[in-house]
Length: 302
Image 1 (cartoon, one colour):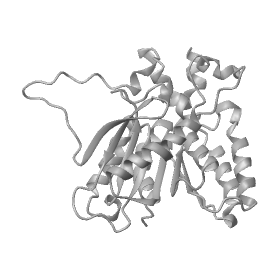
Image 2 (cartoon, helix red, strand yellow; image 1 turned 90 degrees about the vertical axis):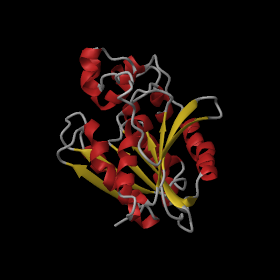
Image 3 (cartoon, rainbow, N blue to C red; image 1 turned 180 degrees about the vertical axis):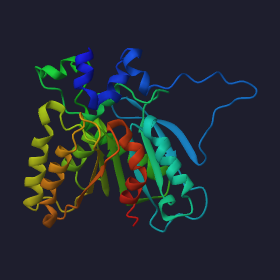
Image 4 (tube, rainbow, N blue to C red; image 1 turned 60 degrees about the vertical axis):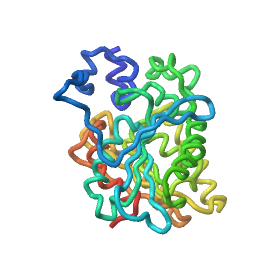
């Protein structure tokens, strides 16, 4: 198991959800909260809401929302950023938006897409964010074969269908400015969203995308997307930012640079791509470090 954990460092968040022994997971897990008493109580970030929504397949997602608290909505509605692994990352993005409430970056809506759990990560993310694991699985992925994988299309249907419709029903949103952030396997899914439905999101951020999945099987999706875009079959496409840290030897930034270099060749066909590297960050610290850069990119704030 130790060997698997070493090789799967990039998927540490998912492995936490798979009940890694405490001796290996302690650095990523917070102690359970103390029971509430007359003098202690939980804290709720202002201007936030939490509710559950079931997808067409019956799977229930926990939806976290951060809203502007005052003033009229823009004439076209608020831009929206969807944050995958919402249990883990919604708080960081919501806090950043809230403290900048009276700046342009605060005139927006953050939607965390998570699961009905108090844990930071849930095992379902493996299924939601990936293509089916190869059969037979590559040697380094055999440990994951016992878990569900491969529901990325259904999850994308939920994200762009029922969830978006519900967000637009509850809040005044700009239909042309819905953006997406995902990290690790979520970053892999973010790339899939670009390749599969390039018109679905205004901006996409893939943070430390786990491109190693299925022996870099995402390259096939990339080639198909490139051919469609170059042939003029795609009229409109999302903007893409890839963010990565430099200090994790298991999170080599060079594949991310190579990806951006390849996609940048499509700029003549309307695709806009940028790379943001954080020299001091490792795989799991990239999301917190990137929050403000992500918000500025997603909401076109310069």
